[in-house]
Image (cartoon, rainbow, N blue to C red; front, side, top):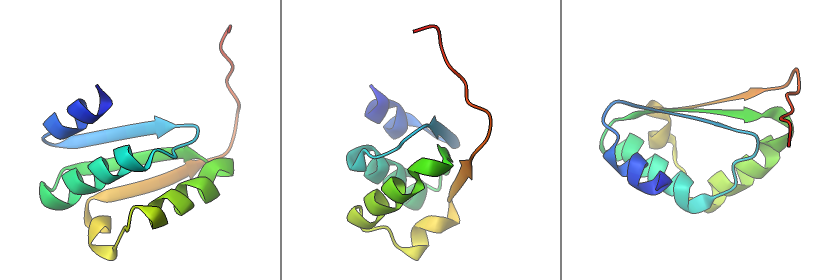
Length: 83
C-alpha cells in the first residue's frame, strides 16, 4: 500500500520514521522525486542516521536526486505509546 501511495503522489510526500531502512521504498521515493519532480521530505531519528546513509548508498543515490529530496534528523523528546 505504501508503494502504491508513493506512485500516485503528485506534489509532496512527507515521511516521518524512527528508522528508515527499506531500500525498495527509498528507491520508489528517489524515482518519484527525480523523474516526476515530486518534493520528498524525510524526517528521521538522529540515532538511525547511519542506517539511513547505508541504505542510501545501496540505492545508488546520486546528486541529481537532491533537487527534490530533503532529509532532516531530529533528536529530542521521546514519545511512547501505550503499547
